[in-house]
Image (cartoon, rainbow, N blue to C red; front, side, top):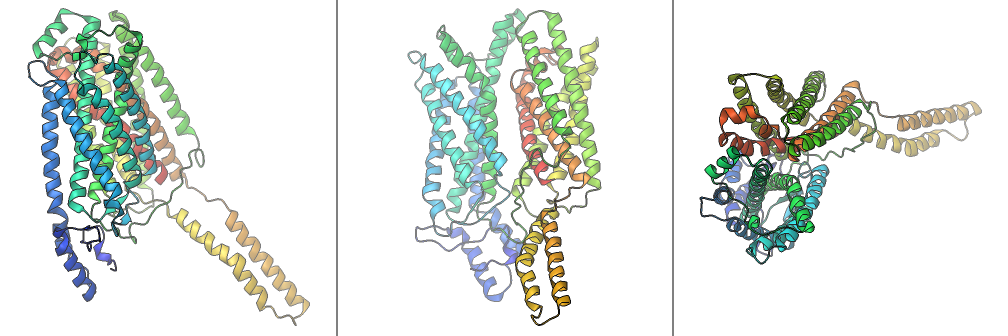
Amino acid sequence: MTEEPGWKDSELGHPPCSMGCGHKDDKAGLASSQIASFSHQPPSTPASKEVWKKGGRMFSILLAVHLALLACTLVSSGAFEKIAVHDYDVFFLLTVMMLIVIIWIIFYLAGTSRCPGAILGKDSHAGPIWLRGGLILFAIFSLVMDVFKIGYYSSFYSCLSAIKIIYPIVQAIFVVVQTYFLWVSAKDCIHVHLNVTRCGLMLTLTTNLAVWMSAVTDESVHKAHSKLKKNMTEEIFRWLLKVGMRSSSVEECNCNSQICQIFKNGYFWLYPFNIEYSLFASAMVYVMWKNVGRFIDHHSHHIQRLKFKLFRRTFFVGIMLGLIILVSGLGVLILYEVQVNSSTESSKKSQALTMYYIFNIVCLSLMSLVCIGGSIIYRFDKRDMDRHKNPTRTLDVALLMGAALGQYAISYYSIVAIVASTPRDTISALNLTYALLMIAQHTFQNVFIIEGLHRQPPKEDCKHESHQKDLYGLTFVNINAVSLRVPDTGSTLATGAASSMEAMHASDLVRSLTAPKKMNWRRKFLREISMFLLLSNIILWIMPAFGARPQFDNDTELNFYGDSMWPAIVDICLPFGIFYRMHAVASLLEVYIMS
């Protein structure tokens, strides 16, 4: 059936295949498309949108909401001692969910995607190579974490429930199957088994979010117990007794061997990678869900084949400055861990906090100024805005704005606590400056990234490629035609003129073929800015993800909000702030390539 221009990005029915592919809820769309094909008029847009929103899509959303609420209830309840929900109950639910997702993915790869006419097009914006590469990187570390978990829990098989050993095994299989599924199918716009596919994708998304919630909760409980064991003060001990935080069931078992301690410390250090893997996978699955039943208009949704050239057409200023920030941040992280977590002296703790705040103030100030400069450069950019429908870009913008709310909340809570508290010392002043700059940097960076994502790629690359092809044909075809038009009976002068004309054309064409493409100053500066921000966001992700969390080490907020409220605020909001940094890295890489 011929695709009409008005069909783009709307869900239309597709004739059933021999394997029973297709759905009854798409008959209305099929009938309207057949009428449009006979009358040569596209179907009405409102009717297409109504078909897109109803039916299986709404049912899949309801399924995801109920499963997410159930998982959230069990995960949050399993973290406290006074509630009769154990951690192995949470592991049992997650194991069942992952097994169902594995079965559905196998069904999709072996059945749904192989139906005739199942995939009529692919979304070129979905699942870019750098996003899938990051997913594989986090998947590798997640598998290592599962190996450490299996080794750690196997040391206590006699005093633990069997589900604690089964869970990491199933999780490892789930990570492998899901990573392969997203690698090969992230761009699919499926047109068969629509309801089953939507529900399967929503179940996959909910499972990833449930695993993410479980990992964040487990990591928070572990850090609370580690701080209790290190300090063992009466105040913190009373706080833990008051909130009734559950101690891990493996605490009752003995872990005296060195290999057991390695497994225990190793898998907690790898939790940040597993957390980021779950969020990356959730984002890619959501885009696939949006693309179910979607037709791609190839006129407005052309594939941009942009080459990623890191060390070409740049001044190296952004890369060098970003590497300096990255290396300096790693040094600050190491010193912070040594002086705060390994020492009980208050003077060393104050020095570490001062060093941490000064580094972040300098880094955030530079990033804010650079983002403002990039936004000003965009005002002079002559590229058109890309206004085509793009679910991937819409999700990127929503995640950037939504994840930034976590850091906004922490910063505003800190500002209120610092301003209202007395006395005010140097650390409080640095903390206030740090909180204000954090708000400003997130705002300016979001503006810069969103503006970059909505810009069309430079047209000169495409023009140059098409111009090259035309010149290639002219060189090897038209020159011969010119030489054939010169009469053999002509004079020597005419022959010489023709020869000189041919040589002139050939030399001009070869020169234009081999001439390097020029990049204007705006694109060069935008690339420098993108690379600097990318490297800076990496270190700002590493520091809180691997233990540098001054919110727990600074007493101002803890004394102002209390021992129960402030840790809960940080535990809820900080994972969103950490995810924001990693998602900003992926978005900035896309902005760099599009510049």
